[in-house]
Length: 93
Image (cartoon, rainbow, N blue to C red; front, side):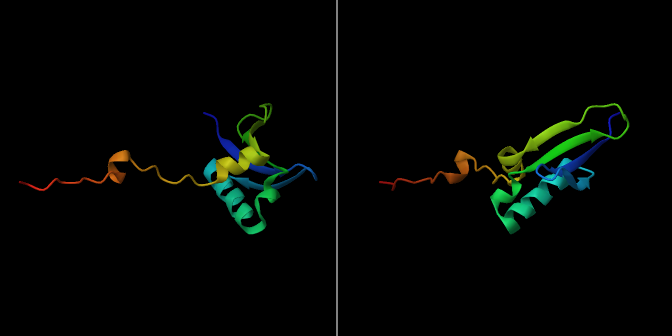
């Protein structure tokens, strides 16, 4: 079984900024950063997944820059067409 750890890296300095147990936690941190410092603050960031059980495993890039920001932005719930339709009753004659 693969155990992933998610790491947020800053590409210009080459420093790891933080490590997270889940992708959702990492994306929430990216979202908070974008809200606090602006979308441009994500441009040089990359989120990678690391297999903690295999020292020889490749590091997998999850997303970086604008793609990372898109993944981190919460998606509004979809509204079904039925919920937005208005039912109009014709008057009875």
